[in-house]
Length: 277
Image (tube, rainbow, N blue to C red; front, side, top):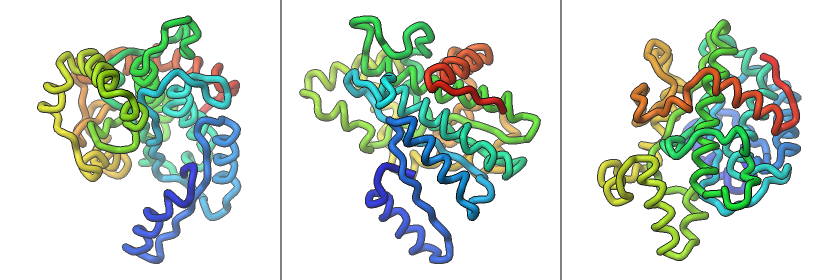
């Protein structure tokens, strides 16, 4: 799924190059629009060739953008990073359930969740002067994890599991918004985030955790999607392909079951639809 088949085509071609018999379907979606998300979900539900979905990886994200709104007048980062995935996953749930035990839902989060929790009283930053680029990002990445916690509660009896990995620092288009800023402003933004997230400067953070290759970053996403033995380990947050339970690494505000239910209810209110699993 993505906004443009042209951008996805090289990946489709690469898959075909490995095995031409693999069937690949592209579904167009604009995650900044819940109307588009619902239409994409319906396309999947209506496709008779898609009888079941064994793994869902909710990976799309934006980071540290200026204060803008989605097509639904929601905070842009919360809308794309969490609410679009919340609606899509719930809408295609019949085909997820059809896959049965062992099915996985992977909500790609980030160490950025340590910046802050969900702003339950003002998730759209309507209070004048309250918006911070990384506060918006941190909220959305916390919501990714809380969504996984809530899914695990609802799907435990069906032996379907949800996880929330971080790919770590990978050089991708995710940095586009910050990279267009003047260097002084960009560095100030990253420095603030580094201290809030890691408790150290950006230079110390990069020395401790060097930038990963795409393949290294993908490892933390692929393992929860396909490793049958991961269910024997404790945890929901994954870094460097390992489950992490250290509360300094995965903040309690991202794993608290009551906050997960509160986030589910808030998400339903924001998207204007209830989902009962």
